[in-house]
Image (cartoon, rainbow, N blue to C red; front, side, top):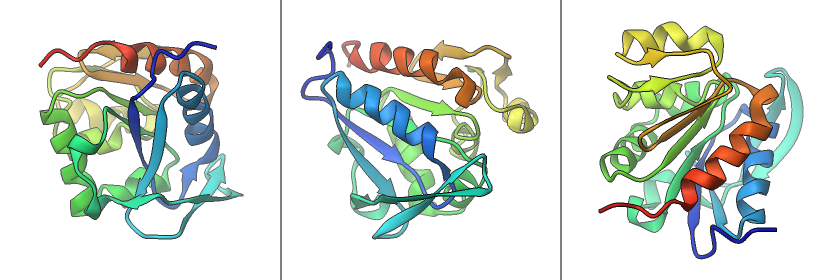
Length: 184
């Protein structure tokens, strides 16, 4: 087991409807590499997880509210998918501001499946090479992204991936990307 992320703290921004495997597997990879993680959400308590968007998959405890955190508290940001999750988050002013500020700070951001919807809402994909779940690719194009159909895409501070089928590659890519030294 590598500890390439020792002393790194990763924010996981998620809400009800998060695709459980898209939160759990990347979180496990990050923890396995020595990082600490916090689930940040728009309401306290627990968020309802899903499998294949429609099958209930238990709950996930919320560590902190997005309204109460600062970008400086974290070294990287993970945006898991699930259709309902980013659809709820993009309607929350604090969640959008957090993603926008994270991007402006130049810190690494990873998004999988429907997660890149938050990047669209934060207006940070213009001129970026991005992949995602097929149904949001038009939104990404309309927001100015160069959309590609690849399992993992790394473009500057962003790592994006298409779906749960790509989780193994996505997990490897985010551990590697989040471990890179940040250039001020």
